[in-house]
Length: 257
Image (cartoon, rainbow, N blue to C red; front, top):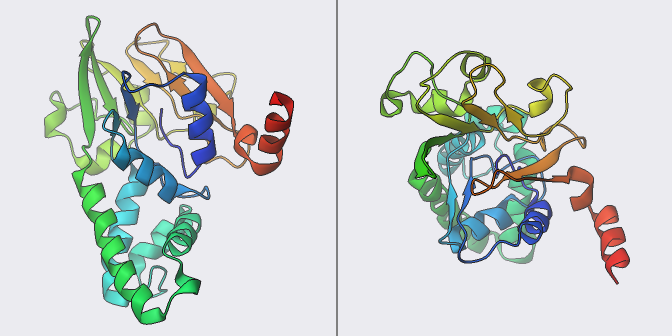
């Protein structure tokens, strides 16, 4: 799966739907942060699960740049922080709020909050630095390259790629031929912009047959869905955005009783 964007409840619903166990391996192709309300919950989930593997997305890159600068300005959202202004344009407010709530900013003395915040910010920076830019996996006779946004079609070896490009590229990747020996799985681009029917369903490259897009568009207002693809049998799963929101979640729980 990819591009969870702070939707921790949707993640939990999906794990239940696919009956995820300690024997399984889950790959998250970046962008757990921003827009939604629970980025920090997803962060701690990923850290706690040895069988969950995550790739660095462009939102993690923006977050890191902003947090590094925040150590200078002593605040998470200083207007003097140029990196924060870019991050804010891409949904940082929800993440900043979740950090402050997690650190209990309004419940402890400022001096204590300042020290805890500095330590926590460094923890997040170290976590992002530890994330790979891509993952290669040989499975059932296929060589998969899992990447957040895509690869440069003109670069033969992915290890020679620009890390920023792997997190930001769009059309030039998925509209052009890439190494035919690889199957690329990517997120980043909401699939309503890729699918001919403008749906958010998993996209299979109809021209070159070696790219799979899985970003269900949780960053696109309330019209998206969380997608998950099982590599073992090719089954795809989806949960609509609305199912993870408070009102709908209460209705689902009521129906289960």
